[in-house]
Image (tube, rainbow, N blue to C red; front, top):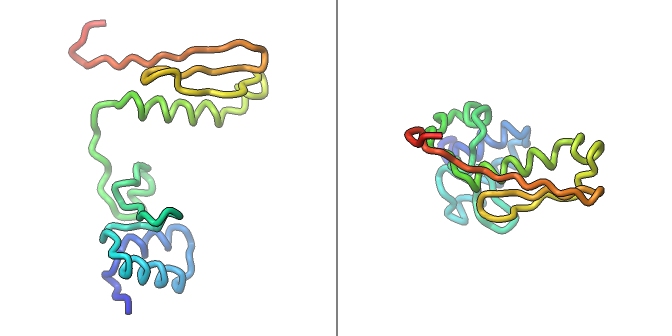
Length: 133
């Protein structure tokens, strides 16, 4: 039997997603059976549990009743992954310029390839606040 305090974030996530109470209750039973972390949100297809630590969206964190993330120094790999995703979702690059792919070139750069055989290399250099330009 599930109690109201069992896996509160699975309940909140279910509410946020519009899931039926019965489905949420089944997810909580599964979390109990698998001894999921208390801050579990949902179960991935591979059997691992997403937790509150995985939520980086300020809006979703607010909806779940979580504290805002602590601001930390930028991370090149995270910034490049976000830039890549943003570029992939931009219709203009595909429609107007013929973007066919964008891939990491190395740990600090991305290469964009276009149907016109042009390429664009994007380099990211992080600079500490105390480093002169």
